[in-house]
Length: 193
Image 1 (cartoon, rainbow, N blue to C red):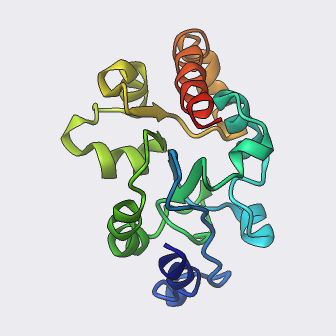
Image 2: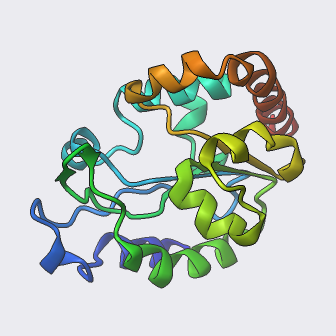
């Protein structure tokens, strides 16, 4: 696993397409129990090199019921974006994650992650890649039908503050899904303790 992570952190496949350069950001350990598959690092994470080290990460940790110490323990949580490097800004937010990362590295990573008990797919890019035909027509439908993917997979919208309007329009997310998510995460965490 350490060799693979070193290879990923030295990856330059997308360099010609990345205005801000390469800085692959992820965290994993061969004993990780929870895999969080997100979109791609934002500009803040690109600078710090720490996954989810921004307002989206604060909200995600709140959703999961995890403090930073547990969230950043790779033996517990693997943080694997669809694109490992910051893709740059688009017209309405960040550009989509580069497809080369998942195609080149995800299968190799998940072969090493033999102890994953819970996978959390954040946003439509991760859901499309991993759910394939099981994904519903929209992200909202997919997330609203979260029970269809249990007990081993949770589907979430991106925790970005840009999604505050979505959260207000979908109050069931906070009242129905989040308690189930926290319970599932706590079960894995407590089993490791």
